[in-house]
Image 1 (cartoon, rainbow, N blue to C red):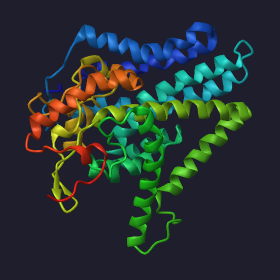
Image 2 (image 1 turned 90 degrees about the horizontal axis):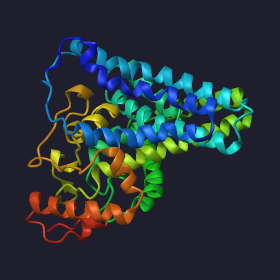
Image 3 (image 1 turned 45 degrees about the vertical axis):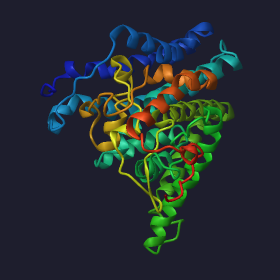
Image 4 (image 1 turned 90 degrees about the vertical axis):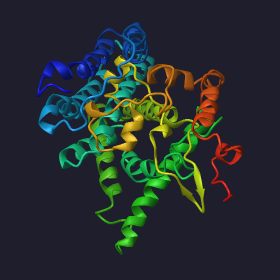
Length: 374
């Protein structure tokens, strides 16, 4: 049970704020200090997971909103804090004579780790809420990494088609990240645009209508690119693009991990079973769930997409597949396909035996094709 409106109960999830000064330390001191942000974001939380272990306790899912105040605040304040840090660093770094070109790129690589690991993750929490302010803050965070269409793709495509060939984000069995990444970049954008165009067409509206969220997406992205240029010229735009590219890479690494090799059973005639907890990989590691505001409780997120992060439920191995490590470690493993396959392919095969012993031929699922009716 979550204690009523207590900051101390929510405080572990505020640890992400401790990461905000790190790029500034790197910017001021240069040199090896520039590695501080990625090292702390990736490796520190992996080590904390090893030290602190699992957290499988569940909050009461019926906890009222007024008891979640301090959990919500962190997601609400992150967007202005990130914007101030990102654009402040563009202004500072483009004028800092002690930083060479390579150091500036390294600095904004670290910024991208932050805007991807924390910023996009917070936008994911916010976009699922009904509150208009929260949804707009999600748009602001995504525009800062030039990936605004993620909102449309995630809400209209991923949640509906997860675990099927129609979901670009579901990584196929044996599909390495380096093949997955270029595919998902293109397919996510095109599927998102087509989804919004189809919605407008059903209302008799052209795609270039002000009700198309892509108009908002492009406007916000242009605004931030213009701000980067105003603060740092073309160098500022280049650094902005570096952090955006790294942030998107971080996002798609997580997407790759979350559903790798997991597919919903085909029922024939293009229909699939309902989404179940078994269709997402879960990790109950305490520290990385603090950093990622319980994103690793991913099965429950797909079961109740608008459930706020402190109320997401943990599942046992009998209900949902479990990752051997948290997302920070698994994301690193995903970048090395032989290691990834050695760790994950046996787990996918075990998952198939556990939940779908009646399916003997997985070849169509492996290739991301809709199986023929049987």
